[in-house]
View 1 (cartoon, rainbow, N blue to C red):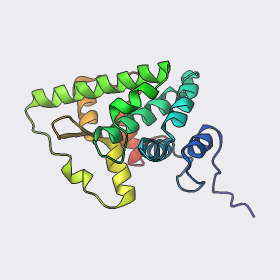
View 2 (view 1 turned 60 degrees about the vertical axis):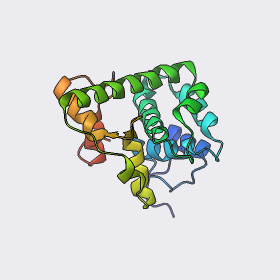
View 3 (view 1 turned 90 degrees about the vertical axis):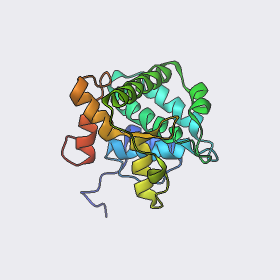
Length: 193
């Protein structure tokens, strides 16, 4: 008997989860942000060997302009995980050559945005915290949420989605076609899904 309120993974989410080797039910496939987080976390893992396949699918998705937000959410999560410099995950330098031309443009757009957030925070005079605290989290679900929504800078300090939201509110410059304010509202369950 099929449970009517439980939607089955379909379309891009199902294929994305399949390529990453995630079993149905391991992520809420009706929540794009959750799928992007789960797949990014998995694709970043050095030993799994799914990075190239996942990135090839992202490149395919980017052939359709309607998939831009989904692809950018994934690429941002992947960058964030890779930024932490953990041996378990591929580095930013290892991932970059695996990107297709469309993905590379999005990748650079994400990196440019976060560089602007870091510069803005530096000019604000408010010190950033070390990423050590989030990197020591043991709970797997919390670790995935924290490591995909925060990034470690070269000096070991962290920037997170709260910094991106503050930047967008202060400067009014979200990433083209992608707002962290909307993402934060969706994570909090207050915005459209």
